[in-house]
Length: 411
Image (tube, rainbow, N blue to C red):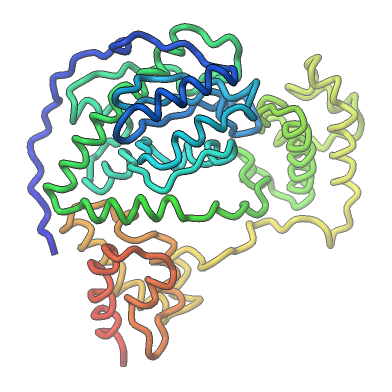
């Protein structure tokens, strides 16, 4: 096992502000002819391609890409507007199918790129690499400062990128996100190789590419803010029906649900339990002109909840999916509690010794399930973990110690 490197004294690197792209802000490309020319230039370039996207998560229901930023050595940078002519993107899609993509936090960008038809067989995720190097801050600005001594100003990542035309300072910010991503990738790759973690990263990047989308959460309405303040099942039913009505409107209009009706208004209505639209309109938010236009829709949802039979009311607590929290194991499954008491400290110690976040060493869900289920009479940890997607580098570090910890508590 590689010993953990002693941390250097924390010294903020001297950084040079990076305020604009070296070649200027590229034009926004939005037509088929412009896409074809960009594709030609991308194919003429060399090496990996820096890729980033901008979405409008706080404003739109969808997670679609409203701007795509690309950069390749020998080609320059490109700002692609995919909204008006998504069917004309095929030349760019083809040009990107083959070279390695460099992304920062690939999980955020891959879904919206795949939605448009983009594909790759190889990627380098600079954020994930930073985690494998045990950096305390892995946001793009922090890593650019650490490795390249350049300062990226905080910008417009949370802005409404569905807006048209996009302001000039937003486009400057967007172009800077890929301006030094190639240089960052090379510097981070060198650091990984120096610490013997290049293969770890390669396995993690391949896992990111082949990992299927997470299944939809059940009972998503239970994530409504401050729902814990409600006391009755009938109140929870009102939340569920209002949340569902809001979701339908938000999806149809492609507006972020919180902009259709805030969570606070849903909980207020569930608490007040209005019996007609006049009573509903007397509540905060619902009395505004925009909500008055939807008053009948909201009231129908509330009445539906009010009229539900007791047998159809939602349970007070979230239905349990998977093992319960560790603090309940001693009573519900003492053998599992014993396994957790033996295994968790071992895994924690390995993470600290190696110098990698524990959640990257082994998935918390995987560790919880292993302790809850046990390995069976003949299976070892390596086989169990391999069947559930743990990467070889992870298994090499934790499988044998887990087996030893479990052996120590067997009768």
